[in-house]
Structures are given as structure tokens and as C-alpha cells.
Amino acid sequence: MDARVVRTRRSLQESLFALARERPLEELTVADIVQRAGVNRSSFYQHYADKDTLLADAIDTAVEQAGTFLPETITAPDGPQRALLAYLRHIDEHVAVYQRVLGRHGSAAVAFRLRDRIEAVAREGLGRMGTHAFEGIPLDVVSAGIAGSALGVIEAWLARDPRPRVETAADWVWRVLVGVGDAMEEGR
Image (cartoon, rainbow, N blue to C red; front, top):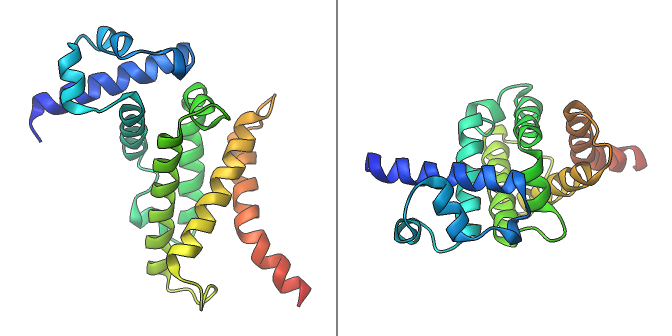
């Protein structure tokens, strides 16, 4: 990708992140974003259809930079827990943005992209692990269940006041994900 394109997108993404920390997403305009980024309005529309698409890309970029979903991390012996902790730390660093994005009045487009990303990671991780725990269930169904459960716990964590520590949230997500299987085994 052309260096100018990368710079412009990064500038727009960083500007949106900064503005979203300051005030609600619904109050932000494209004019606010381009002014903060130091680019013109036509540059914005050359790269993004709207601010939700920009925010989704900004979150994707931030997650990639945090390195939380690297395949080698996910498939290491304690990789899923480490990846989850790293991801929740990233969310904690940008908590105001995520609270606005994932809250009741958040961005459906961004929430969909996050769910899609988590599903993809779950599919890849489960595929690499070769587990038989979900035999008979299509992999896309299992990964959708994992993503939905994880995001549900994350949304509940972000809504709590006071918000518990990252380690507590990671424990909650992990226990919800593995606890259902454990509970079913105990009931047999």
C-alpha cells in the first residue's frame, strides 16, 4: 500500500480514537475528524464511506498493533489465555472508546467487525488444535458461540462501575468459555 495512503488512514484513525475518548461517537462529525487529522474532507471519503467504517478499521489496526490475535499465540499451550489477557489490556487502554462502541448506543458495524474477528481467531485456533470437543458441530457455529460469549462478557465488564481489573475480566471470559463444557461434564 502506498505510504501516503497508510499515513492518511493512520491519521484519520488516530484522530477518531482521540475524539471518541473525548465525547460520544454520535456527536462526532466527519468535519471534526478531518480537522483533527489535518486532511480534507475528500481525503476522508477516498478512504472511508462513513465514520463507523473508519472506527472499525481503527480498532482493527489497534488490535493488530497490540499483537493479540497472532496465530502462534492462540495455539501455544497457554496461548488463548495470554491472547485474551493481551486483548483485554488493549481494551482497557482504550476503555472510553470501547464503552461507547460496545454500549447500548454503540456502533453495530464496529461490534460486527469485532465479533467477526474473534470468530475468525476461534476458527483458526480450533482448527489448529484439532480438538474433538465440538465434534458434530460445524466450526463456524462453534466460533460464533465463542465470539458471542466472549463479547457478551466483555460488554458486561465494560458496563460495570467500578470496572474490575483486566485480570478479573479475563478470568470471567475464560471461565464462561470453558465452564459450560465443564458444567456439562459434571452433570453427566
